[in-house]
Length: 228
Image 1 (tube, rainbow, N blue to C red):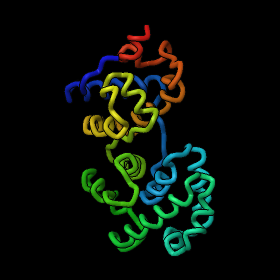
Image 2 (image 1 turned 90 degrees about the vertical axis):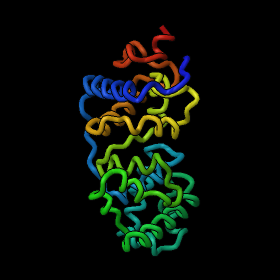
Image 3 (image 1 turned 90 degrees about the horizontal axis):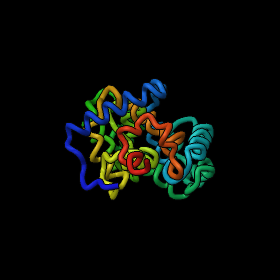
Image 4 (image 1 turned 30 degrees about the vertical axis):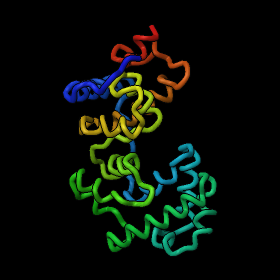
């Protein structure tokens, strides 16, 4: 695939709009219940370097073991580690969770991030900066899933697809792809674009042996053209 640089901003915006519409025609409009911002933040931290299945189990176990985030913050680290062990990297993540909760208590005066819901997207994003182990992807997950702000988290599925489509250079990391594309994502399509891209990556645009003939984006895809 020959992709030397990102296409023009206007072209990227048009492409993302067309991609979102094409995926909606194939998959429909996905539904995802809005979550509490602090819940989403901790769940996303737990999802780092593990599967969605295991991170979901770890989050449910943590919520079952402690009645509130204040109770988590006041507990001893080994108890948190035990609660999230099923998700992997329990020692690292338990320390990170305690640090994050301490930072949020210091900033907000309580264990709560719902203030972000009332802020413009740029200010809400700024409110998540500097938290321990919380990078651009995690911030975007909280903004998109909990705050319903325009954001574009780039996971492994989304990264693979946008590279194959030729929207970003092949050498771009997931973090770089997010930085390049996020400003151009149509605000009204941000949530369904992200969720439908993940579905496309799981069902069609697989890492190995992608089903290009079944892909609704094949006419827009540099990878599919080369594979033909």
